[in-house]
Image (cartoon, rainbow, N blue to C red; front, side, top):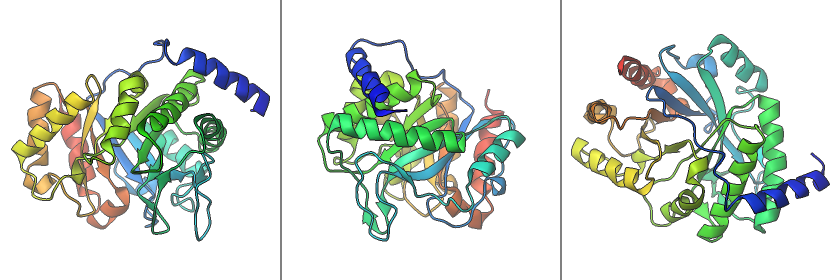
Length: 305
């Protein structure tokens, strides 16, 4: 898209943001399974991961980052580059896994925790310039990889909450309005330096967000079933009306593990009609365990009524 057309589009978007309700989140799918993949360059392939035909399966490529692809990366103000394992997770591999499995969709996640051992900061020069650059670079990556959705997982910020909300909200609006992606998600966690940014985004643009990939594995190790259910209710209230997905990590992180009752807690939520899906961080870590919990998660969801 040339710069003149993009500028006109951005001006139109600015006029629509405060009044538009025509774009909304997708209908709930209780049998949704999602998995982050590619962040740790452990040579994991889409074809390595077991995929049940009984669920809707989302791979989430991790990550695209608006930093320079160099040995000492620096912010690029919305110009996104690929930092996932692009040697093994290629456009042809995306096309192949989607052709083999009609229930598979592929998204990419923006941001992440670190790059080259340094924290990734959300650091826009201005709202308009960041959105303009993000639209151009993300649209190109989506087209190159034939992607279906986008996830936002920034965890460090060098700006205020309103600027973050406007940048991401306007990006989501444009991508959905123009049919570039069909779904969006965010990946917050319970931290006072992180959660306010996502709550500000949710407050103004929650109707554009299909899924909340809440990082329940960021809670302390040894989380009990009752604590997990309390945490879920807290976040369900924070993201009122949203589809809050439950989660665990296979990297030894915290939260409620499958061994300690995760699926029992899921059963409680399912019986209450509150289970919107499960996601795992991450396929890279699960490979050494032969994806046992990916199988268990999908079997659980596939059996749900």
